[in-house]
Length: 91
Length: 229
Image 1: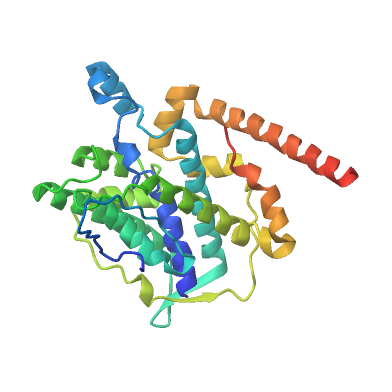
Image 2: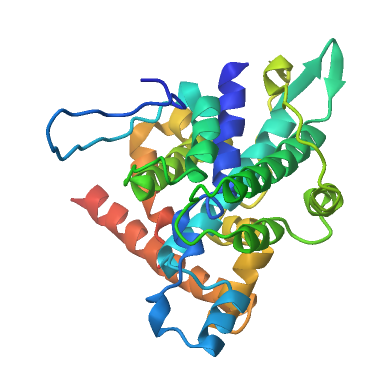
């Protein structure tokens, strides 16, 4: 399902539902739109893993910064990225 | 072109990462246990349910997002109908309009008695939006001007821009250390929060520098040991 797609889950008996998110870099505009809309009508939205997606966004931005601004991935491969993970540990 | 706009969208999420987090609107402890003075202090210092480490991560991510936007500005040309567009102006418009959209959605939801994020009231979201941009910056001035006038939101036609990469690539020429990224990501709300903890921002930056310096030393040693072995 693409981001920002309104959806609901119906079950014919009482159920515990578990969902997760896959955030793709190619659909970030839709994700932004959905993220903003998702924030508001919380009465209709019972999704519980907001913090999980916040962590994914953080990692994506760190990755973009390392790949594009710092140019670490093109030049030195993934090892360089791995060795720079400590940069995100601030406490 | 789409991929550049996707990076722009990721940066926007990075800048709004606190505002769009429901923890921002909750108190750090149960509301029944908070005295009137305590509540005032939490509001004044922008203390909320987000932990200190998460808050610092958000500040860092905001700094990275501003840095990425600066990199895009230096390396890409945005145009519309064969006319070059000012990327900074484009971003300011996008950010300010997103603030107004958030405010209008919230107002509309309140009028319709639809629950927003838990404990997210109109005055608290206004407070967060006002603390998003640093004073004397263009987005801040524009936000105040357009927010007070209750400007109508427009459909932001970001997809209609053509994006081309500059013929000559501009490598970054700024300090990209953790300390600089955190300083870049600090907004007025963060400054209130960190000042209440550390006393002042410079003390906080010194602490961060020493912590990272220790980590850098540790990883350098580890690299050396691995190379020797």
